[in-house]
Amino acid sequence: MCGIIGAATQRDVTPILMEGLQRLEYRGYDSAGIAVQSWQNNDINRVRRLGKVGDLGSALDEAEMRGNTGIAHTRWATHGEPSERNAHPHMSQDQVCLVHNGIIENHESIRAELIELGYELVSETDSETIVHLVHHHLSTGCDLIQAVAAT
Ligand code: GLU
Image 1: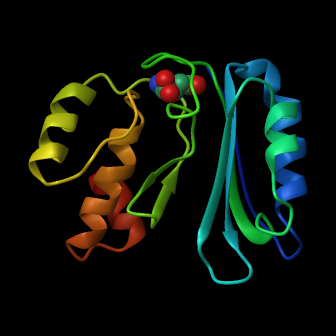
Image 2 (image 1 turned 60 degrees about the vertical axis):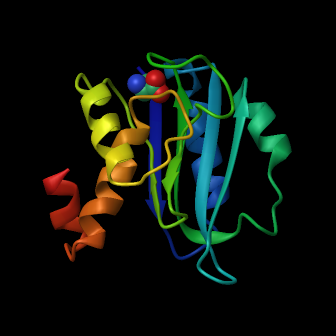
């Protein structure tokens, strides 16, 4: 179980995501994270922290985290210890960013395929495999909907 929130807004999305995480904290409380596409340059800025949503809130650099689109997560670990490295959102090549609820049963074989394709997996989670697979399908010419469906 975990808490997931995503939003696309016309105002700054970060306070909306943080309020959502506070409300969802009971669904996962070992770590929390947020990723927002920056107003300034469209880069995806991400902050993750071991512990409570409050700890994440104190770590945010408000200037950097301003944007209109973002996702956030409170984790209840199933694969990989509670740690900042294993906290969501997970990213691939600084381009695709993902939060996930649940378990990827075949993550070990997908992990092996991804390594074969040249991806470096930096967490111990099953979830990280999804974000690289989406990136891989995008790199073959799929649009986002097609890449997610193929994944
Ligand atoms: N299986 C994922 C992990 O361990 C997601 C856990 C969750 O649903 O919070 O990171």
